[in-house]
Length: 341
Image 1 (tube, rainbow, N blue to C red):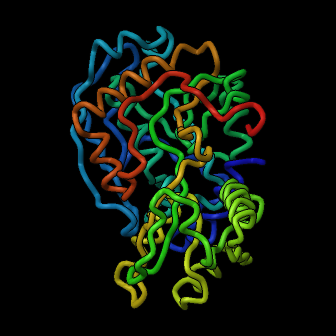
Image 2 (cartoon, one colour):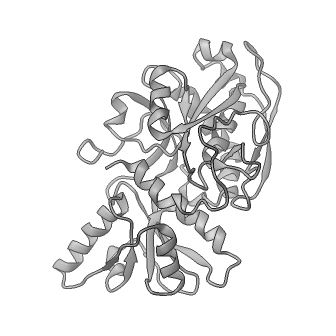
């Protein structure tokens, strides 16, 4: 199963606020980007505007980011001398809010992923150059050296570790979304799903997990009423009409949808989460670089610096993703095993 394709299917119809321009390449300059370091040397503190042009999906927050010279010194010499960090995002053609999509100016790539990339670049004293592509071409860019590091919701897997090195920055979680007045909560126990009508997308990781739970419940004489809809808009319509009890979707998709329903007549809320890797392993999303590039270490160090100074928390809060925070960025953490990668 292709995890990102599953994620994109869950988010594609939620992207009504904006449309990506075909073949767009969004660069790091302008709104939401850090001030540049010149080739061979770092600039002073940069300003990164988190949530710029997000059309209400984020709380716009300006952060001043000083260069950390000790971390900059850990960069590969070629990258340090170039003075740029080429950040890859695989958001073409339709984007996937709130993680990466074109902002209200119809040209600037906004979202939690490029914003974190810009914060990391600023911390390392580099100019962020954000390149947008399709998911497949993103990895071609990494493999060819045209992209230094991807910030694009890549899940760490043992299979991918054969070719890439990782610096984790967010938990890979799935969410249960319910109407706000529903008393139901997941509570960390699949048994609480018994007797509930739950919508899930076909061919996704969340479907696999849900069907495993359904099999367990059936062995106990109970069941889940699993519902399928042609797209996420249809499932959310069924939720608001109370034809189903729960939608089971990637957490960022749910977080975005919750912000969109907040002022509607049927607001929704998060009723619990579970790891996208299942019950025995916490799935992790990570910055992704070519194996042997020596970029995972300084990127992880920059993320940990942002965690310590509170700017990482500010980023996630701005995008309503605080529940996916990690305590520490790890280099090449345990990934989904080969059997499920």
